[in-house]
Every structure is written in C-alpha cells, then in structure tokens.
Figure 1 (cartoon, one colour):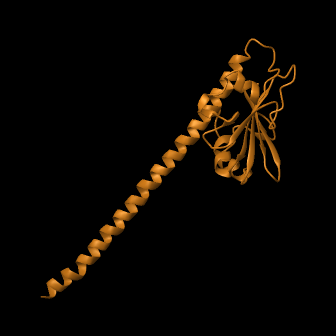
Figure 2 (cartoon, rainbow, N blue to C red; figure 1 turned 90 degrees about the vertical axis):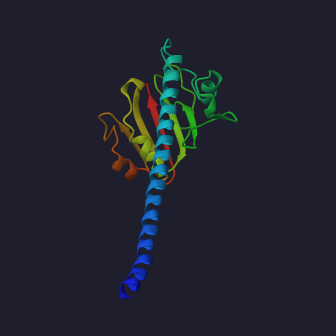
Figure 3 (cartoon, rainbow, N blue to C red; figure 1 turned 90 degrees about the horizontal axis):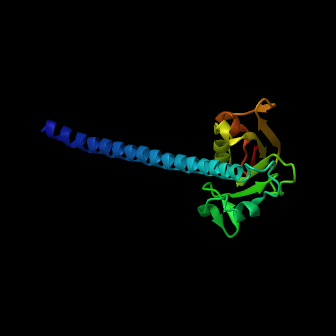
Length: 186
C-alpha cells in the first residue's frame, strides 16, 4: 500500500516534469524560428541594398559621374526593384524609407559627382547594427558608412578613425534608438 501511495505522489511529479519539458522545448523551437525569420529579413534587406548599388553602377557605367542621380531618377529609370516602391518612395524589408542621392537628404548628385549614397532613415538600433556590421563585398564600391543619431555623427571608412568593417559589438554601441545610415558608393 505504501508503494501505491508513493507511485501516486510520483506520478503527478513526472507529469509536471514532462509538461515543463514540453513548454521549454516549445519556447526553444519558437525562439529559433523567430530568430531565423529575423535573420532572413536582414539578409533580404542586404540583398536589396546590393541590388540597388549594382543597378545604379550599371546604369551609370558609361558616364564619368553620377550626375543627376536622386531618388526620383532612380525610380524613373527602374533602378529599384518594384516590390520596394510604394507611393513614389522606396522602402526596404527593414520597413524604413530609403533615400538615394548625394547625401542622406537625397540631394541630386552634382556634375563631376563620383559618389552616390543610399540612406536608410529612421532605423532602430538592432537593424542599424546589423546593417553597418555587414562585411560588404568590395565589388559594390562601398567607400564609407555614416551613422547619424540624435547625439552624434560617425563615419566609418577603410583606414579612417572608425574603420570598416564594423564589428557587431561596436555597431551596437554606436547605434541608438533612431538612426540614419548613409552608405556611400563610388
């Protein structure tokens, strides 16, 4: 009889243990799926950036400069993938507006302007860190990344005070709640 009572007391404990294990397993699986989806979204956004830079460089390859380039011209010349265009503006998969031109405001590139910028406006800290810590392919012609926050402005470049590529811990340190990331290409 003592054994029967002991089994009755252990049975609820075993069930509780199994329930706890099932809940923990569920949390781990859900977290992995969410992280994987977020990572794929960031990768897609980076692929969009690569495509924009390549399309612009290809369009202007026979020109000596990027004269006249701005967001409107990029849209008119179909240099932007159609799925990124809404109401005459460009939006990334990171759900922020993208501006193209000589600077973060989308100023038209002047004659003899041999650089253009792709700017992500209103980007949060996590997305900012993911973007600026990306090891960009040198064939894209990335020259620098400017990070504009409410408190500061930093420029990352090859051989500069703040060097490219940016490590993820440094990126998280420099990025704030709301950022503008300006990627400048040649």
